[in-house]
Length: 139
Ligand SMILES: CC(C)(COP(=O)(O)OP(=O)(O)OC[C@H]1O[C@@H](n2cnc3c(N)ncnc32)[C@H](O)[C@@H]1OP(=O)(O)O)[C@@H](O)C(=O)NCCC(=O)NCCS
Image (cartoon, rainbow, N blue to C red; front, side, top):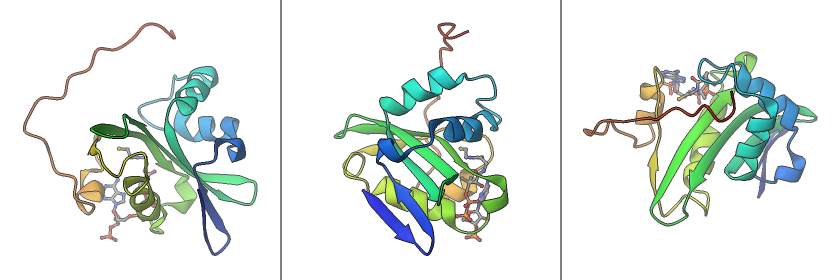
């Protein structure tokens, strides 16, 4: 899948991905500053991902872990700082939610401070507790 908007490209084709640039975007977030490039590259290969590019430059990234039929988990969503507030995240989320790998699934995510963004797209706080068991495998 490859979509265009003006001079922007949005694609799930991983052979087009600039993995070091995507890793830099992800490492610049509050949740993944210590994640290594090797671990990030492995996570991409096992996920449905979208990369947003202008020419050679990577401007945004999001990925989802999905079973294609019941549940998916959206994570590592980041737009380059200088490109935020231009509805690019909206475009990426709409395309991801409608992606064939996710469209039939319940879509989950965890956010610290961007709930208002996701609420515009039908996400709502779940009444159950979100639990996490951290791994030491990559440290
Ligand atoms: C969150 C993020 C992906 C949104 O992408 P974006 O391109 O900046 O968002 P958009 O321009 O499409 O914003 C659409 C709307 O959501 C709102 N919005 C965007 N980011 C928001 C945030 N962090 N919290 C609350 N509302 C937000 C915008 O104000 C806008 O509102 P409007 O329609 O009333 O004008 C991007 O800001 C980002 O990369 N943030 C840093 C990383 C991050 O927090 N990622 C999400 C982790 S769960």
